[in-house]
Length: 68
Image 1 (spheres, rainbow, N blue to C red):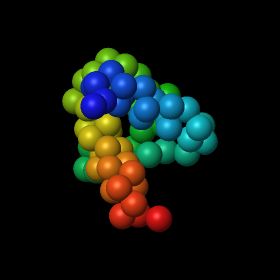
Image 2: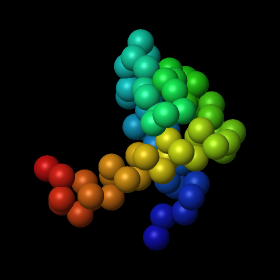
Image 3: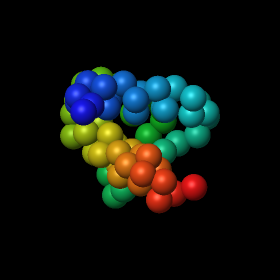
């Protein structure tokens, strides 16, 4: 079982390879740069938690083979 800290590390690692010049939309909250999202995740604020949640919504089906 993954701990919340392990999950945050995984999401941060995925963001680390994301292009620096692109913005990421987080639902209706807004658009953020890679660095802004990394800071929000590290602060564990609402935006960071929301982005981690969105990433996990994508990764869980990927792990189970539902997305190829």
